[in-house]
Every structure is written in C-alpha cells, then in structure tokens.
Amino acid sequence: MAVTMIPTGYRAKISSTLSYPLGAKAISEALEGVPQTGSLTVEFRLWDRGRWRFGSTPPPYRVLSVGYCHTRLNVVYRTICVESGPLDAGWIIIVEPVPRSFRYAVRSMLLTEALPRMKRWLIASQDTEGRSGGHNLVFRFDELANELKVEENSTVEWNTTRAD
Image (cartoon, rainbow, N blue to C red; front, top):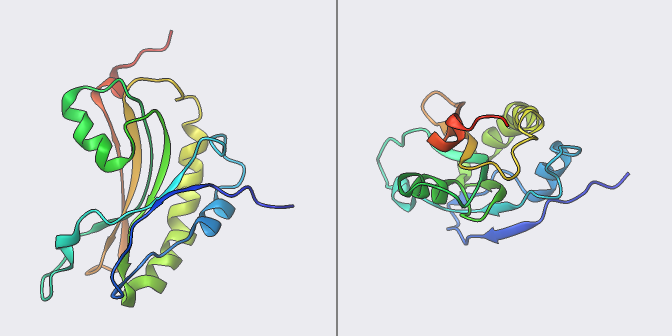
C-alpha cells in the first residue's frame, strides 16, 4: 500500500554545515493514518540563524514541531503563531536543521521518540478544525544532554474555548 505523502510547503536553503534530520517521506510514513493527513503541510525552515555562532554553547533548539493555528488570534499570540506556522487556519509540521555532526543522532531520536508521540498527539487533537487560537507540540534537541525535550504550547483562546 502506498503512503500518502504530506506536501512540502517551503524549504529554506541552509549552509553546508547544517542538515535537515528528516525528510517529508519519513514523516509521511510515520504519521500515516492520522486524521489530519489531508490538512497537513511540511515546511523546512531555519529560524534562528544566530544560534550557530562558533564557540557558543547552544540552548536546546527546536528541530521538529507540529501545530494547528487559526486566523482569529489576539495580537500577542500572532507572534507565537507565526513562529509555529502560518496565520491561515491549518496544520503544519516544521523541520529545522541541525549541525551535520548531530544529524544521525537527532534523526534516530525523532524517528523513535518524536514521531510516535506526534502521531498520538495528532490523533488526540483531531477535533480542532475551526477552533479559535492554536496549539503545538515542539521537540527541541539539547546538544549537551544529547536528548530531545518536548513541550506543548497553546493560546489563551485555545485554553478558554468551551464545548458547545
């Protein structure tokens, strides 16, 4: 059976010292069957170019995230939502590059830890279409601890929406 490929919306050019740890095919295979399959887009972005300074100890940095964002947002959350994905309503997965020397280790962690958790999170979040606000799941790589850290974020609108 063929895997339904999640379309790629944007792919940033990166330096030769960086590498994206996952591609759209690996993500599509891991998330096969989630309810949002027809609504998801994968983007490959480079947000924080300053984090790659020579000699600095990087904080845990985002390598993979998934989120839902709706256009009816307050002004404060617009900044957060732009960082997490588009301002149009919809689902987005964002992959960010890592130093080439960490690519294999990060890829392995994303395949074994992050993508299964992301799949469970998407299945649990299937009733979000049209809801105000946004929420996301973010995976950060900590170079010093050589581990993934995970966080879940949501807007005030998301947290205060009541079921009808």
